[in-house]
Length: 75
Image (cartoon, rainbow, N blue to C red; front, side, top):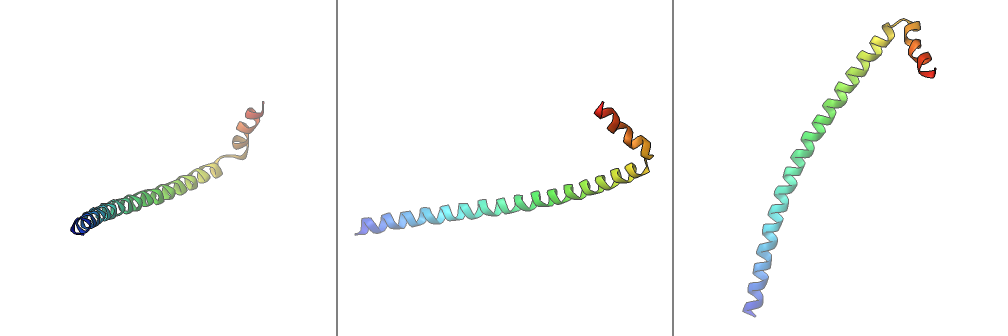
């Protein structure tokens, strides 16, 4: 009986340690996810700003100049 209780206590100790390891790993992954999400949001914002600048530049081009590459691509 004592042997079985010792085995059970040892298994419980290992489970507690594993649980703590998983909690630390989960916390680290949550931090990494937050950092990657912030980076993604920043990149999306920069992309939107770049698209806006490009659209502004395209709108400033004369219509004939903007259409010229289309004619060359089809040739």
